Length: 112
Length: 113
Image (tube, rainbow over all chains, first blue to last red; front, side, top):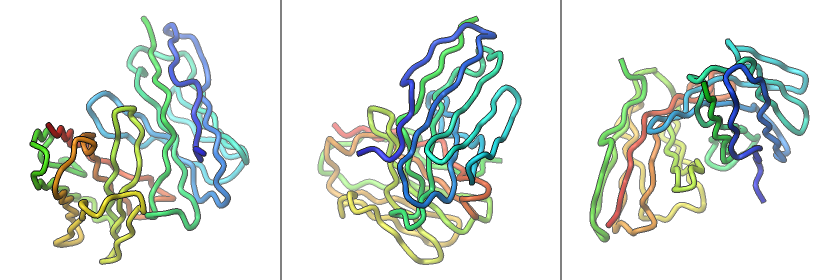
């Protein structure tokens, strides 16, 4: 059973069309929830860390929120350069290999 | 100045060979990691290494072995390569992952033929 589930798998939007990406998680002890952006042929690029329910963080057109069961990445008035795969990951207390557990990502395409 | 650098970027090799991927970080981070991204783009942790303590994901075959000559380097050695080892391998580092996140390298695409 996946501990981190992202939806939708793919999303195509028009430039300026706002939307949200979802990340639901089932870990028992959350130390942090992370959002990353990954462009083709590159490594994931860190966007946000959220630690507790109710927390929100913003960066340019992106806003991340966290509840006890899920996180949302809201994208407002996106531009074509926002096209990428957005990855959600959790850092779990006592997690194996002390690293991050990733979801499968949402492939976002912003059409001009 | 690249924070986490991996070499080579591409590696094509035959089944049964032994190969290594190098990783260096210049961020002064205490912990380094290796992740594998499969054909479905799913990132999974393989190892973490902190101050000579190695934590291994139980699903990783023992043909894979990380080696750290110093705090800034964590190289990945793979013995007896198999077709299923074909993937993109990412190195990453963190100082305190729960605060500042993890910094990833740009990846090494390994193709086993």
